Length: 74
Image (cartoon, rainbow, N blue to C red; front, side, top):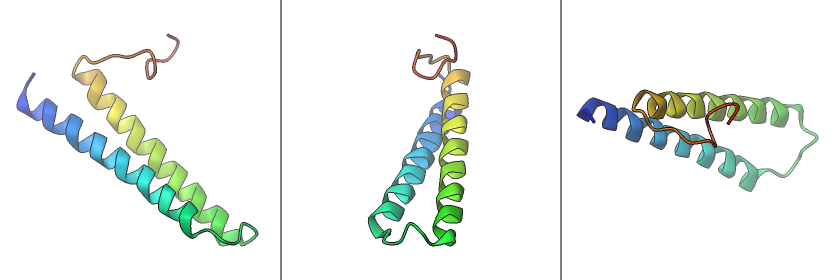
């Protein structure tokens, strides 16, 4: 596997992990679920997690790594 491929896998995995950690930190400091800004922030975090996951899956797929957990329909 080319070094660039491994670097991309590592970088996208790290970016996804950080996106999840940001969401975790959001929940740790959450104290008012009725505040409309909470929903906006949460929606932003969800979009960031989804984008990071998609990038990670793309990198893994490009490297030829497949798993039923991220291959649609399997």
